[in-house]
Length: 137
Image (tube, rainbow, N blue to C red; front, side, top):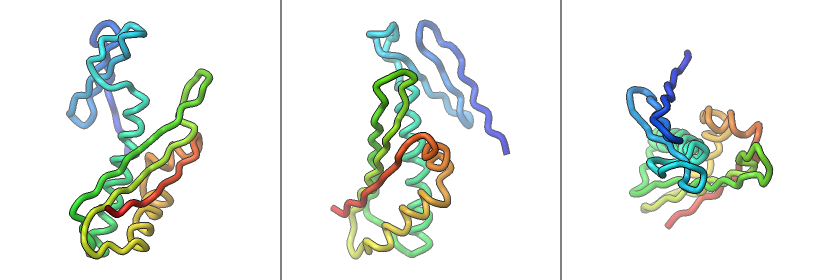
């Protein structure tokens, strides 16, 4: 299966990506000639990772008959100092709220996502150390 994403120049440093029929505007910071019309491409990589693993975790937890009241994945990436700058460290924090949440099952769902199901994680782990933690509020 192939995916196709079109990235079209929208003037200056702005680009519009079309992904699955949805449009996402990307732009650079004003300090480098952009107009700040959208997010930068590298942080969108972190959003892709967060979305991929979040969908996996919820799917796995539903099969375990666990449904949190609230779920969030906070993704923090650390860029290298030298060009080409890339995320060499990424930390995922899985944040849950709800009654009767079993930490072992939450951890199992996160590990299954990272080690088996999340394709974005599989792609990134070859170039970055990816760690995670679990928080129940």
